[in-house]
Amino acid sequence: MADKAEYDPNAAYDTWMRSRETAADRAIDADAIAAMNANPDAHAAQFSHAGERYWAIPTSSDEFVIRTDAEYNPFENL
Image (cartoon, rainbow, N blue to C red; front, side, top):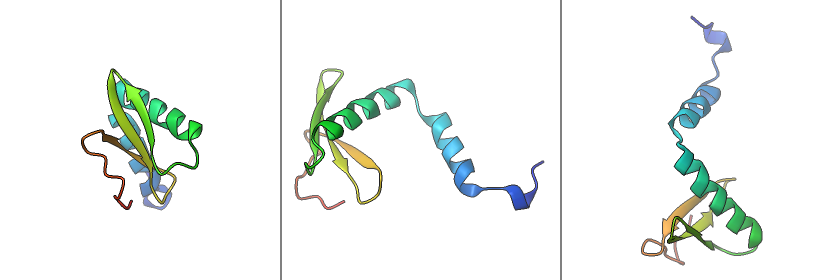
């Protein structure tokens, strides 16, 4: 058992999240990141993945959300 003083809850959470990600998650994330890199000043970047259109929307942190065409709201404040 690990020493409580050495336990890092952030690292534990990151490890748990990585274990939940699937190859499909990583593939759509890669497409979203490529679209955002191609349009760095855009509020949202449209991209296609597996024949569907999506929007990658940067958030106020170093992360992003992905929305389908039907879910995308250009006035959404993230």
